[in-house]
Amino acid sequence: MNHDRRHDLVLFGASGFIGRLVAQHLADQAPPGLRIALAGRTVSRLEEVRDRHGRPEWDLLSADSSDQAALADLAGSARVVLSTVGPYHRHGLPLVLECARAGTDYVDLTGEVAFVRASIDRAHDEAVRTGARIVHSCGFDSVPSDLAVHLLHGAATADGAGGLGDTTLLVTRLRGGLSGGTVDSMREQLALVRSDREAAQLAADPYALAPDRAAEPRLPGQEDSTGVFVEAGSGRWTAPFVMASYNTRIVRRSHALLREHGDTPAGYGAAFRYREMVDTGRGRRGRRRAQALRTGLAALWLGLSTPGLSRIVDALLPKPGEGPSPEKRASGLFEVQARTTAQDGQGYLATVGAQGDPGYAATCVMIGQCALALAVEPERCRPGGGVLTPAVALGDVLVERLRAQGFRLRVDPL
Image (cartoon, rainbow, N blue to C red; front, side, top):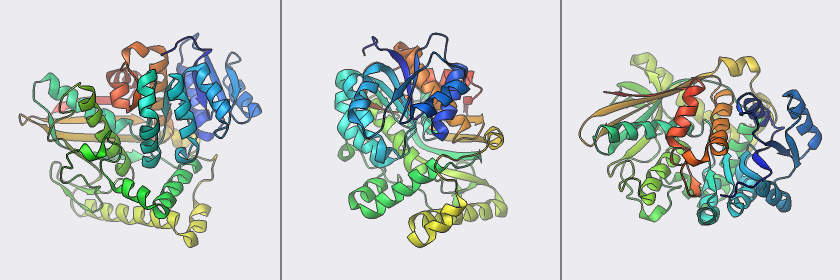
């Protein structure tokens, strides 16, 4: 990693809806002297962001996601790049490739399987060579899931309990809104799956993001949960979780990378299996909530993917550049709980939660702290490069930083 750069951290997409929120977190939390730059297409809009936060020392960089030369200059100027420019499948890969070539650490907010698979296939080997840590999915996609399993594995290892077995994450509390950028990304992913058979097969593969998909053990029961049922470990009714089809792939990539890096020969465990659902409660009310959630999710997918209905959906959902109000961001919250049984029979429950809209307020803290960890204490993060995950690249460093921000991260024995 080359530390002789003009900037310690460059925020790309700083004038977008979520980019402005991330800039606020950096203005509040970055240590004095950290050399930060804002990057985007329009310098005048970047100036507005910089002025709003009273940071005249922040540099401004003009760069467009379609301008390879500008992206190369951006990557070459920075030790760490934080990108909020999505949809990433449309806009993100050129910057990832330039960061991999330049040996520049990189973080983003993607929840797009096809994009991350392309990043793995085209950037991983180069990033390993240069030492660039390419860390995707540093927001609500997929830090809570990834760190919950990381915490479970750490507790079982400390107790000498062996590897993890069946592991289930339930979303127990969730209140938040949508932005136009998120809606645009969802619509693009659905369109890609409809139009491209290979993309559809990739999206359906539980091991889509494994380093070597063909080498995975293909354990039964790893398909995405699409039904309504009572989860045996908790006794709670559950419904499909909208982000499970992505988060589970990230967690399985962490599992595979740990095996590949030799941290633990069996990763999280030879019998490790993982799934995610939404907890809707007990009894008849829990069942009704689960059925309503499943129906609503199906209706959303239908509305986003059907041309005749998409205009109606567009009128109801936020446009690009729009998102939840400050009041709604402040009143949001989330909590997830992951339950597992280790090899020796000991059970564990990991809880990850925070106040603030999960997709915007909490996400800005998560990605901001990921970027600051790499910029401020890179030697404590995983050495060596590659296309990594938050748990593998940052692990306990990120756990500590999020706890310091008021996040709840803990493990309890069962």
